[in-house]
Length: 115
Image (cartoon, rainbow, N blue to C red; front, side, top):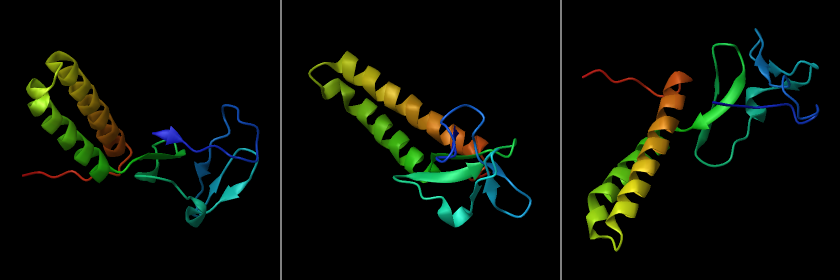
């Protein structure tokens, strides 16, 4: 999970927003942020970790789609001009996508399905 830091404070460690009991977020200097103020670009969602720090992760659906695409590319790697490079690139993409899904899972954003 990537922590969201206060834009008003200096960009230094320890300036992350933390969850408050009233549902708002605050940096150590007291600057407030509401859930409606959290505006993320791309396929990301916000989450709060066990320490109460506000952050963002890749949306789990997007991570799974990326994983599926990487595995499909891996299956087609033998048709490439450079199969070894294509396979290595596809595996790297698959590992990255799985890492993004795992981060979403650990942040409590990804659902768990038991079959």
